[in-house]
Length: 425
Image (tube, rainbow, N blue to C red):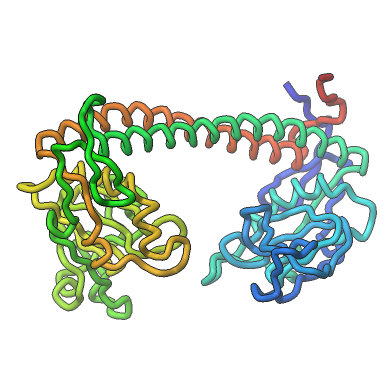
């Protein structure tokens, strides 16, 4: 168990009640020169460039791309000033560039930047203010943040302690995330095999005549989705008319709901008046909903609707004719071809999938009883995989919470790590 400091004093921060007696409090502007990046357009980026351009994104460590020149040759902290990732803090060193949504913190005195990286990551969430684009912490607001710190030697000790401890946690998280990815691949392989080859490994195959479908059992047929179902899209009642949304009782869905896999709750609710005066339509329980457009990976994703609802124009409702096909079988077929379907709508580009594209998708078609048998088989196998994945996800969340708790305790002085030593390897 980690020991605590002998004496504490009251802090001037409302979310940190006390800090060790010998720690110093000071506003960020007294410790750092505060600057800003510059506007760098996508057109300036060069795949052959030598120097990174850091922006507001968090993937790739915030690197937007590369250019041939650099604005900084230093060892500093940067933070995202506004947008969805406002308040994210990074340590940057060497030769690099920052866009105008990055603030810069250059020490005015000798400080351990690794300690202040942990500290600022802890502090900035308390200072974010809501904004139409997500949140903001602008330069003037960063300047007034009250930070606190021990001696340089102790800063270094805390940083070393956190580097070691969080490194262990991050390694475990990475292992679990790798396992989740393998489970996803295993799940996808089970579905792909079942919906294209059936359950009999000795069945004779024939050429389906569809390039990305390949060989299928010789007794199966192939049919376009529009021959098996009724396909239509919804609409969005005007958000400027209050009576369309206030005290609504009719479930309404946006394209993000397909991430649920099984859609069990509405995005919002609309009124009868909204339904009558907009292009949105009722979609029956048991229909498949697919996102025709959307940010990130949403486009092309499909999910089963578990209740009667309405939806927006960026969603396709697929009401399968149960005399021709089994809706659950069609769903796993569409899921197995997510990437193919997505590529029909421009892949990672902003283009959308339209109803005509969707209707012309070819589906393998076993007899109805066999479709149900295939779904049952897939469901039994994948449910076990999904349970394992969910347990891993919960475990990762607990590890992340523990990691954050560890950082919080160390940078607020709740634990004294001055005597800590890294175990010898």
